[in-house]
Length: 282
Image (cartoon, rainbow, N blue to C red):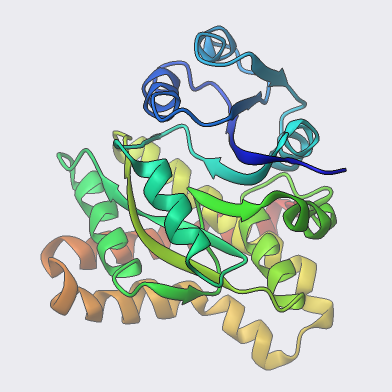
């Protein structure tokens, strides 16, 4: 199936009624060819709020793959951007992001994130994480949102995500790209994470990341060498306890970054251990 030349924007959402308006408005003002919103069964006003900005609003069974599968079936245009509802997209974001992507050799590319709110310790901490994590642009093993791809090649690869409805889906997606020798990159175009983060939100986010870490490990462990297993197990330790804290002395503010990163590691490993105990799956 051919796609028309143009740009489709995809949002997968769940109970996002409070923030979805600002995010969709910032994208709609930049005149994309299509905005798709796939809701995972929200109990708030997310769907009605989304319909104020686009007619392409759909409801899927909850789960990241379930929502992505619906979105892929509705994309009409040749280039797709997977956007995040807790992000704000400044003027000319789309124009600059699309140009940067077309000028690159990447199969997929993500934009650079900066935090809009930096009031609480957790907001300041995640802002420091982004400064360190995204300091070096260029080729990456894994990318997050906002992310841009050519629609048809993306569809051909992504069907192997069937059943991946948890936080590990991004890691599994990156693995599929690597197995197909497709390059990913981090671009310079900036979007803003428009999310207030307190202790409760932080714990939920990083605990779920840890559950995703375990899911990805559990899926691959039968085919991995001992060395690769250890690399997966110690990935969070190396990044959050050693590598990024050291880099914060050059790039960021270590008095914020170090305790935030160490706490992040503890919570992520807690999610991993919880998944082992409860035999969590993808």
